[in-house]
Amino acid sequence: MALLSCTLTLSHSSLRRHVHEYTTTIHLSPPPSPPPHWNLPNPPVLPFRRLVSFPPYIPRSSLISATAPLLQDAGATATVLAGAYSLVRTFDTLTQRNLIQQSLSRKLVHILSGLLFAACWPIFRELLRGPLYYVLILILCALVFWRESPTGVISLAMMCGGDGVADIIGRRFGSSKLPYNQHKSWAGSISMFICGFLISIGMLFYYSALGYFQLDWTWTIQRVALVALVATVVESLPITEVVDDNITVPLVSMVVSMLSFGY
Ligand SMILES: C/C(=C\COP(=O)(O)O)CCC[C@H](C)CCC[C@H](C)CCCC(C)C
Ligand SMILES: Nc1ccn([C@@H]2O[C@H](COP(=O)(O)OP(=O)(O)O)[C@@H](O)[C@H]2O)c(=O)n1
Image 1 (tube, rainbow, N blue to C red):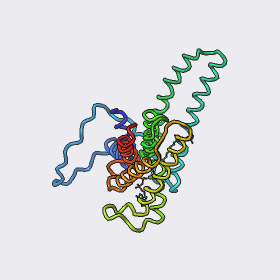
Image 2 (cartoon, rainbow, N blue to C red; image 1 turned 120 degrees about the vertical axis):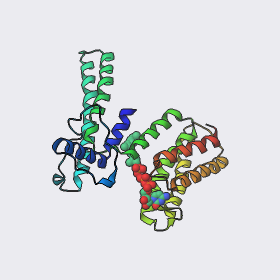
Image 3 (cartoon, helix red, strand yellow; image 1 turned 90 degrees about the horizontal axis):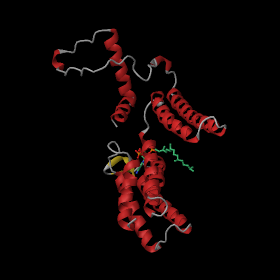
Image 4 (tube, protein in one colour; image 1 turned 180 degrees about the vertical axis):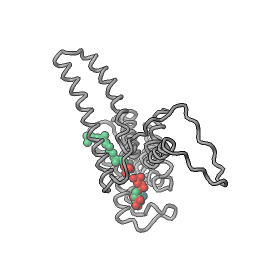
């Protein structure tokens, strides 16, 4: 956990640049003395010396176009995907050719996949928290509400459909802002409510048609409207800087849905 939070901290691009400048300064020249009125605390004495700052320093002059960061992330993603695919294929082939036992192959993949994943962190510019939280919520819903519960389906519909549509419609038609949040608009929030509601009902219909649960539709429509309303209000609050919508929207949807449906 400590390692994860350390990585999250250093992965922020501005902090990374700061780390680089800090390490360069202490290695190459004495630090400039601050003006007397600055009264800053002494920097902490680290129990180790950082020999190189990661990721390796890229001179600003070489960042000649705005597409360079995108290309770096795209290249990093392609590298990770290719590495994961090659790893699994390699051990699959070794097992099929009876060169190693299946149990050993599985454990070697167990060892190497996580280590390779961690080894790839430095090649990314920063951790994209939105997509990470999004995937974590997908996993949480699958683990907790697998198929037989309306709650998982509704929560995902609100996070994926509702919150996603709010962004698209809000950016395009959201000139009229909410009185308590100048970053969000009536158009975005109303479209979130409508789309979150409709997509939830559509998903519930799909699951009930497949026989995973039976619903009283008059009652269900009222309850889903309540979930959509609460999720929309929470999404509209000026708390995005504190906690990501991809966490608040599904979690609040889960709570209201669990209280309504009981499962
Ligand atoms: C960009 C994403 C979320 C963050 O949005 P924002 O709130 O920051 O605007 C979506 C991230 C998607 C993720 C990287 C990939 C998810 C893959 C998914 C589990 C696969 C579905 C398979 C299905 C069969 C097509
Ligand atoms: N209720 C909403 C939500 C988003 N939006 C628009 O969508 C943009 C991105 O929304 P956001 O800050 O929730 O973005 P994410 O955190 O979902 O990526 C906002 O800057 C608004 O232009 C809106 O107008 N009304």
